[in-house]
Amino acid sequence: MRIASKVLQRDHDGVAGFVAYPATAARRPGVLVLHHGNGVTADLKTTVADFARLGFTTLAPNLYNMLGVAGESHIGRAAELQQRLNDNEFLRVIGDAWRFLARRADVDPTRTGIVAHSMGGRLAIPFAADTPELRALVLYYPSVRDEIKTALRPRHAFDLARTIKCPSMLIYGGRDHIASAETRRRLWESFHANGQPLEWHFYSYARHGFASPDSDGYQPEMATTVWPLVTDFLHRALVEPPLA
Image (cartoon, rainbow, N blue to C red; front, side):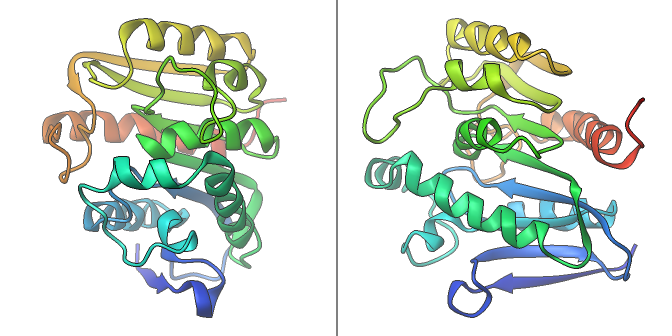
């Protein structure tokens, strides 16, 4: 499928990031890709283009840039930036990006979902809880910890996942150094409690960041294994007609 793409500038387009879409006039499902702590890196742009080739208009907003941090890639700065920017600020600009995507003439806002990695996965949980119109949620190793609520992170995923109203897919590895086994168990229980379809994929040998070439945990064989599971889930949730 032939696609088009564009780097978006906050001052000119209203949001910052990277968008790719099939070069046809038809309305289609939309996918919002929320980046990991390293920002909108080159590999993430490739993922956006891959989703576009499958028929999804796909946007990866540069959350850091939309919050005043210059640049696209921020490798090595994730911890620093997350200590400066609170979740409410992140959620505000994720909402701006969501509305930008949903209002595009080539997007069907009733068939739009989120794919999120690490930091983006952690942030996608409160956003999904606040956005009942979301139709699909895919989380690659969300960086959820068993931690107290603070001004930076005023709400916890354990509470919020119980209120999500769409099908979800979560992917974790047994060698994840951020989310402990107990954290993963509690998160599974919270997602299970919301009553929506849940697909939980666990790989004992997978590391945090296995799908990101810029991560120390990169495992290309794992990224290849998981990709068809993700695309099949999105097709069933966003493309196929809903069951009566």
